[in-house]
Image (cartoon, rainbow, N blue to C red; front, side, top):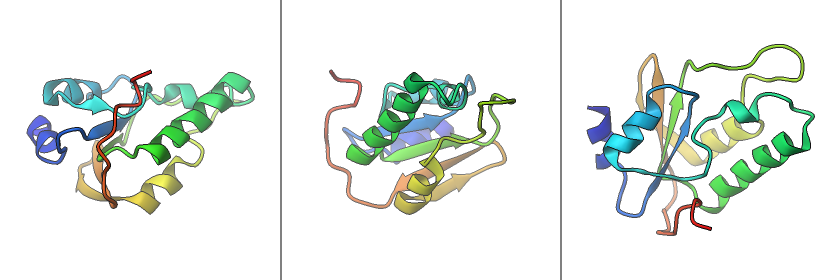
Length: 130
């Protein structure tokens, strides 16, 4: 059901981004033969060791990729493993603002929400292409 929904709402050349960590969304993308919008399949990397230049660069790069080539769909899991303790956070810096500014929810359940881009998607190569 979810795979068909993703396929129906992703035009040829469109990409999808997940905000998840080890949950169901990567399997949905594989079954739907979707192209991931960024090299980041999991979101955990953005949430810990926040004082590390590597993590700060990854956070910035992720948002830049989303801004440059917005995915058609964002699949945001409601409950996934998040780090806790010092030098961690529960959300990706700047992501919620980006999401609510450029996307609107088209399907929501207790476990996930699928958001669709408000603008016109340019058919571009995936961010995974070097």
